[in-house]
Length: 121
Ligand SMILES: Nc1ncnc2c1ncn2[C@@H]1O[C@H](COP(=O)(O)OP(=O)(O)OP(=O)(O)O)[C@@H](O)[C@H]1O
Image (cartoon, rainbow, N blue to C red; front, side, top):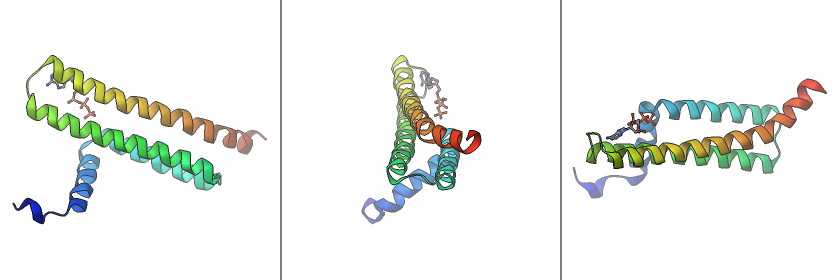
């Protein structure tokens, strides 16, 4: 296939779609993002809170895509067990976990006060 004829934008969209199709965690994170957006609309978030939620969603998706890319490269280069392959995959999974914890903390600090007012006051 002629590399120069490929549209980089289409390739990028294919990468996102393929990751969604093959990675269970990506689907879970997409579900969480949809829930956060629905909650944000329902609780009428301020513009500044929306920026925090958008940052969290973006960070988690970007890390998940990079993790998937790294996993594919490691599988290509090291189909058999290798301690360096383990180190690379574990570190990439750790990056996703750090991003997800960040998103959880920010999400809780944005939504919990609003939900408390709605349900208990
Ligand atoms: N080639 C390898 N050599 C050594 N350890 C590996 C190798 N491949 C995977 N592992 C270990 O198995 C774990 C799971 O790897 P796997 O490729 O199944 O990713 P995963 O957990 O399915 O990630 P995800 O759910 O994001 O797809 C890695 O974190 C790593 O500890």
